[in-house]
Image (cartoon, rainbow, N blue to C red; front, side, top):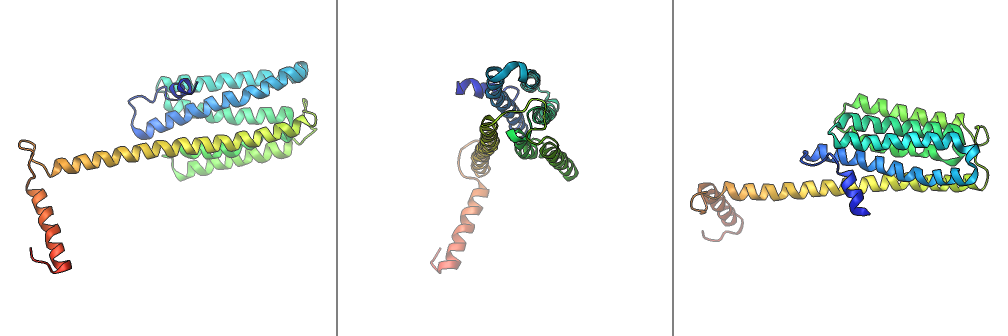
Length: 238
């Protein structure tokens, strides 16, 4: 199962530079998480009262399709379209679902996760872009929080299920943030390791004669400089 997920989130990232590769993988990872995070809610809507929760159930099906399209766009190297669709689809899903079942379910907490993901998805953007993105996310969070309080929506979730959904939303949003940061940190560690290995190889090549494999003049200068520094520091003969 994990291998299948890994293959899915690396679609479109093959043979891409490190920075672009991380963006593609992140888009796919968040899209896959969006699908898996929505499925438990769908089971609840279907089992609890499908006739009541039909609007939110059908809306979620549309948004799941949007997440699938993100992965498809990534696989076709449509990087900008994939990450833009991911942000729009996620923001709309949180807003629509909250407007249907109320802020008491805590779904709007995913806006915090969306804000952290945006930083990594658009890390080459100008500062003004970040400011606009954060302003939009904050506005959406405040709007959903105050416009759709518990009991004011057309398909409210009764207690104690609303409390359980709030807990699931908290765990889900924090888990997504933690997973994204871990995977991004891991990819950066791999990139740093590859850079160190490449630098070491280039350093060896720069001090070695390609024909004979012996140290060249540059290597000799480095050895003499180190030896002279040792003489100056410790006063021993050279």
